[in-house]
Figure 1 (spheres, one colour):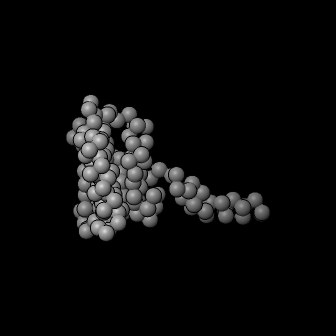
Figure 2 (cartoon, rainbow, N blue to C red):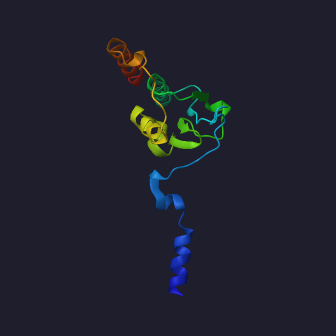
Figure 3 (cartoon, rainbow, N blue to C red):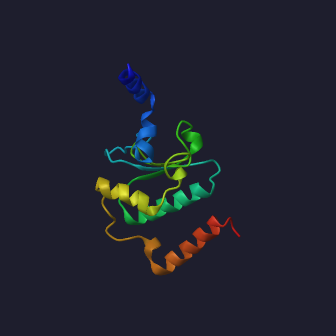
Length: 149
């Protein structure tokens, strides 16, 4: 009888509680696959976007400067069934509000997923990696993070 109770108790524990934050979630993301069958990097932002959403859009710009990947930016009003802010690659969840990374992506976090998926890099990096432009870009990011103060 004890074994039966133990097995029943183990089955009652949700899988997410056992797996922890590293569990890969897959969701139906509109436009998550393009016409050529490639996975699309999707950034979902709140309406109006807050600090985490602005950060994610900056990450999208950096990714576009380094990788050949289709990117779409969606306002949460178009996808009310998905968390905002959040980031997906195809249907794979990378970061989501209230979940992994609380919806805030980083360049390295997204790059790790792209590298594991074998996404090609741009033949030549975009201007965001130019020293002069990068300084101005980083200054703008710090102003946004500080709330314009």
